[in-house]
Image 1 (cartoon, helix red, strand yellow):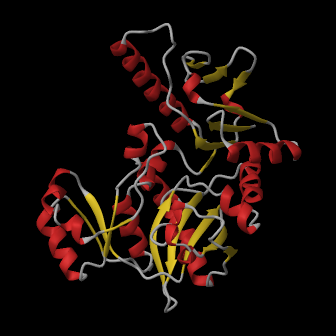
Image 2 (tube, rainbow, N blue to C red; image 1 turned 90 degrees about the vertical axis):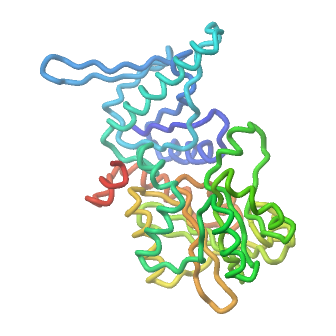
Length: 335
């Protein structure tokens, strides 16, 4: 059985679920936010250590020991029952549910796409990503993580003011609860006037990388799907394709050099993942420069634009139920 953990509204999961059912796959989909308000989950141990664990929605009784693959797509955190109105009590319940569900997920020895939650959290760390990518031979943009105003000014001068700033995480999006987000931002002279404010919060600064095209490279298992994003065709997406201008921005499949394809697979596996969405830049002088990897990045939009069969690869992997055997790299990622 395949377990899909995600929001009720998830076009990616809808699309893959349809394909899986067409193939006759047995699956169960639900959002962990329904624990404990409308879903019950139990783990029981016998005196000799035999385990029984199950999940009940009222209509369905799922024996979790039958799960061969889990797609950890976009699950929400647990939400306390509406009848619990005291904020302290609600916070306590939701925190306990988080510990409980994480404990259950990390106990399940099956294929996890992209990985168990603890591995995803570690793979999402930006500085660690760059360190690993550099050790694997990727070219990186000169980068500074800092909350030191002095370090920021020195970096700015070193690169003649030709730098960009980025956030370390998606916390801003999550905390505001809106569609507001901050993408890659070119550091202007006006920004530099506020250089002292850097000390209040760490920021990522990078030397600006000239772009011929940007690349979105989606790795599923050992299959690699690379797409060109011609972001320089639109002023709106010139510095960050995530500003999306689909009517002005061409998208095409891209043929990566064989050694770079293998390096992308190695990066994903070394992070303890079996899926990853890698962002790179192809410069005007034909250099491939690594930017970052999103361990649970979106892909459906690029599939629709290019025809790359990413969803089919996701279905193949989930149906196979084959766990990766990458030894110490996986153990290090979840340790």
